[in-house]
Image 1 (spheres, rainbow, N blue to C red):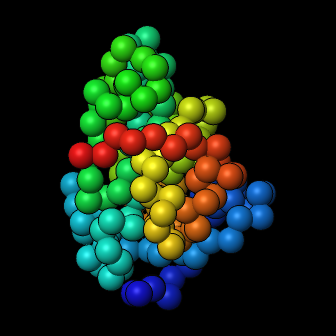
Image 2 (image 1 turned 180 degrees about the vertical axis):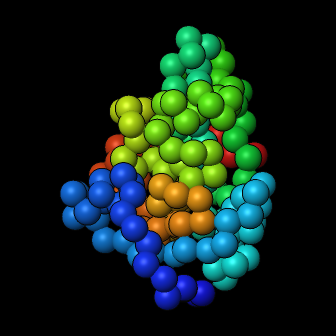
Amino acid sequence: MAKKDRHVSETPATQWLKARQVAYTEHPYNYVDHGGTAESARQLGWPEHQVVKTLVMQDERAEPLIVLMHGDRQVSTKNLARAIGVKSVEPCKPEVAQRHSGYLVGGTSPFGTKKDIRTYVQRTVLEVDRILINGGRRGYLVGVAPAVLQEVLGAVPVDCAL
């Protein structure tokens, strides 16, 4: 796996992980606008299936929620809404997502969000050996054990992948 020899300063996400004594590895890469998980996976030499995207969405009451999904899959908002018992789910506009999470879009981490946001994880993410997930800055992923998402973060497993 490619790893750059440059210092990465702390983010709210890494502070959150350290405070909970979660082991993680750092994986900086050159951020590309609209490159998404395909670009980070390519640069870092990881399967895109193991690069997890953090999506800020909202239900019909405009209550925010986070969905953690494989990089190579999409979220079925219909299946997600059904699974979590709401009428509908839609992605938040970038400025709304930023207001809820405290992170810039493209650098959103589920760890250390500005507000406590209910979080869901695609069940199959928990089945891979290791994942890369945003570390709180564009161009910066952290490697963690998938169990951290459920056991430490409290993410609820759901089936909503397309």
